[in-house]
Length: 362
Image (cartoon, rainbow, N blue to C red; front, side, top):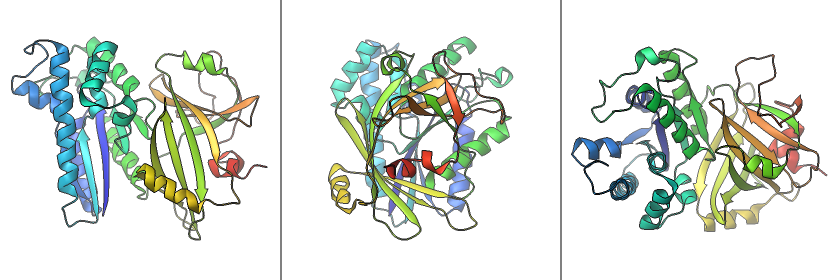
């Protein structure tokens, strides 16, 4: 049995409700048992439990977070009893969404109340897919009709969308699906991104990779909504035709662990499958480390730049250069970047700049 838990999030009137229907149809056809964890805020607000009816917003947020985590725990518990090989748990918003509705002091109090760190909450999901509000670029479709709990104006919806993206930035598999395409293609892209994450064929276009001049780490940390993660990848001795690595990722002493297997059948598209590990499972797999490849340690800075995830990796063995990943539409022109970043050249697809290539460096 394989249980995968993902989050579908986004700003108001982003298309999540329709997206859930598409996910049900697409992945049931692929043989998945699909379970949906309903949006907790909508349930509470529709039932009369609201930030404006509770004593304070903090008291409401404590209730919402506890109910959110308990629902997810029960869904995972139920999933483990099912006679199914592949189960996809889809959360209509995740625990980190709540951060966008609180100030820093309130969020810290909620974390203390549930006994979790932000890292633990964020990395409790295998992947996160953010659908951008219709208020950004598709204003004519922004509506209150399909959600009685919605109350944001266009301006408020845009600001909330930005806060949600900032809250999730730093997750190991975070994708943003905007309104640069029509709604039908937006939903197709959502399905394509999930298929790619699950290792199914037909992955979407990958982010482009650039070799850049090494920026100052302190300058990066001070960029708006920038998240810092320490990542250690160790390659294992795996079956022929499959590249396997385990990864430790975290910040401030709180880590998550995963196993990533990559297969590229001849004449077919690459398939990447990632699964979460416990710390003990991770440590046991380290015993299978490939002696021909060294562990790759890097510091990753994740931020949202003009609505697209941007990642910068600094390596201890490079003093004057770094790697950057960014999605952008123009296939020819170089992307616009924060002032202070300098592209040396594009290295998309070059083996020596892939993670495995860096592991083979002398």
